Length: 86
Image 1 (cartoon, helix red, strand yellow):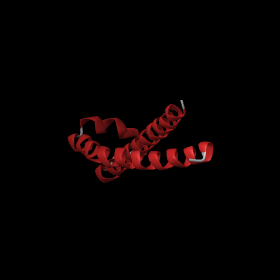
Image 2 (cartoon, rainbow, N blue to C red):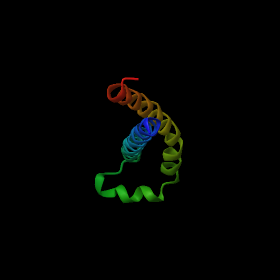
Image 3 (cartoon, rainbow, N blue to C red):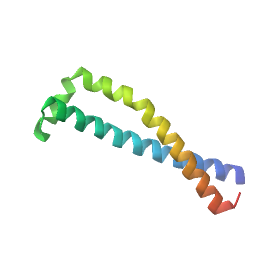
Image 4 (cartoon, one colour):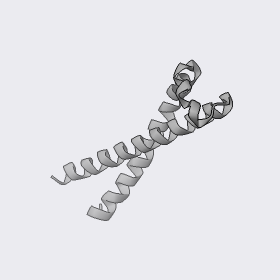
């Protein structure tokens, strides 16, 4: 049962940090693309027609996921240390 709790803490923390980093990274890529293309906030919908925007999002997805896994693993380890003292 203890191993299941450890595993659940790791899974939850990694999942939370992957989602957090992917959302933040997608927003950064969106803001960068809007700035370089000269779009305002009202013209954000026009990014759907931009193929380069989709490619940028795909290329940035892998580092965001890797960073989320690393940070989530570290935080999960710290939580397990605090809860179970292992």
